[in-house]
Image 1 (spheres, rainbow, N blue to C red):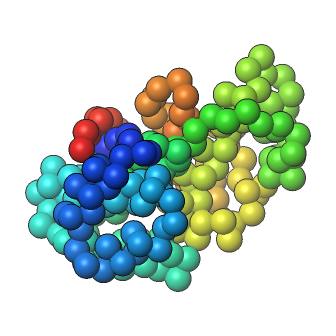
Image 2: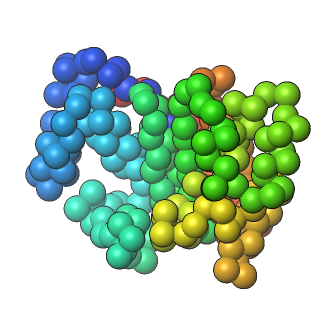
Length: 210
């Protein structure tokens, strides 16, 4: 089972920033200061608070100071539940599981010209886009599927996106199978969840308000 939590921040709220900021340990406060704009600081803070809530729901007594990073900067806590955080615009999503490896991606749906990204798609994905009656939604569907897999894998954008074909819900990457599921947040965001264990890929999705 996978727990997926999401939240929205008020991109212009200094009060919300001060409230969230006060909860974090010192090392996380320093990282938050590295972001120049208020929205980036808020989404960073909200992601960590969602993770804390996920740990609480799974009865895990971790602190944010337990977080470590692999050489590709994927965060983890040694020997504990796997987790992944994504944010776009004012939306933040956190996925966490004791049973499987997870990756999550959320994207705010801006207007795009998908042909500017043809070098990232496989032949099958290009056909989907060319045949689609809703190119924008199809673009973000493909994009979040790819991103969720590379985030779950842990190597991030060091993996060429055009080497991952995400037309199907079961995707192989370097002989490892990943299972994809769509997260329905609202019509302005696209989001997908990737996991490496089909038996434990069911998920709960809940909004948390700070």
